[in-house]
Length: 296
Image (tube, rainbow, N blue to C red):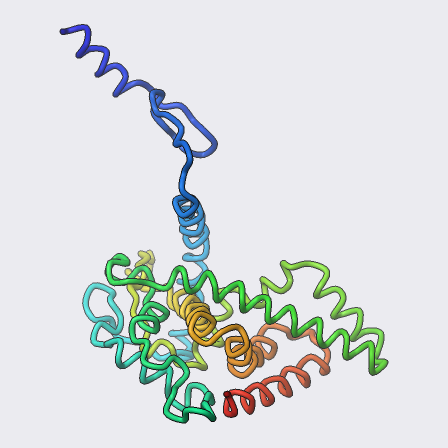
């Protein structure tokens, strides 16, 4: 009996071994026939690690923006919780308003951008930091929206390049676009979550309705500093595009991107872009807004 108990203790507290980047017990068995959706846990862990790397930069930039009165501080609703009074119905009314998006259905004028989908819009505008994600969050919608958004941006640049070649634009314009499209990283840098939150999310006014908890950093001079606004607001931009993609389809999601996201990105984060890029971005924005106003 003693030997049996000793064996159990020995196996239970035996030294861990390292498999990849994960420590597992020596007596642990590999999981057989793991369901595909379980694999997303590793992706979530990696995503959380990357988020931590951005956190310090987000805090510094938000603090500088607050000090320069570039953004209006939103008072936290206890313990760093922002917009705790906001309800899903408030979020839906905000997103469906004419000031937020020009979408209007010709066949059903009463049908709004996200219809009556309160749950969908509340997930899109709720960061996973809110209530520890227990009331739903936008991680999955942001994952979809982020990839759709970067695809739409790449397609826009390819369209400009084709236009530049057709119209015999200057060699410098063509070379700029070719260099931009030579690496996906260039597109990723322009449409980073931080950039979306800094410029696009601010113009959309998402801080009025998004629910989130700020991160707190101790500054040796000024004490506790709250941060994370740009990253959270950027994830809500991605979440909204993901929600529109899910509810209305790829065409409406692309039109929303062109009408509300493209122009702020090109103006703020492409300072060396030739005038052709800004001209085409402004044209695409106007055409997309008109198309949304004449939706089926």
